[in-house]
Length: 277
Image (cartoon, rainbow, N blue to C red):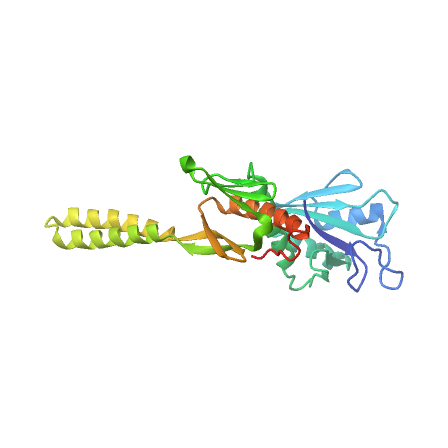
């Protein structure tokens, strides 16, 4: 997976999946001359494969896809990593007079002040996919006791059995934020005791130690007071289920739940279901 940038002689932005017409672009030159021009700017480009150059930078890499034609009309750059590859790309364009087309934004890069938005958006999208890929079983939220079984959402209550919700009975399913009142209570009690001990304990250092420890516990529970929730809306009301799993697990589960609800919405039993976030 990469951020793709097209180098060409075009002076107008074109769809990266279509060739520029004769009036807006011309060939960059022969494959040999193109490799020579790029190597003048970046001497460390590896051309072991003449059709596919590789340049490694500071936490980024650029692959130059020239193809096997003798004449090069355009070059596709496949950019990966986390650093800042924009100066390396603009340096080539300034030296050669080429333009750089950001295929993700559909715009030419401003060579004097290139916008990093396309590169940053690619990194965010890549990281999102990677975090979802790390979830072993996206159909289960073990800590929250939720499991998706086909078109049924199952909520486990341990020894008290399971609660089952048919997706076709939902008019809307969305992720939200809720308040964990148990965490709020523990936080308030901890902070209250910490302040009290600080006042009444005669030994100064012991009073401060007790205050710091209990205040830390209180702040820890404050940080967990706001939690993800799954809101299930039905014709009879709403059901709010607290979620205590990791953000990646929650996103993966919601994605599968969205697909399952969409399938249920297309069925005759639920023609008007929808999914929100």
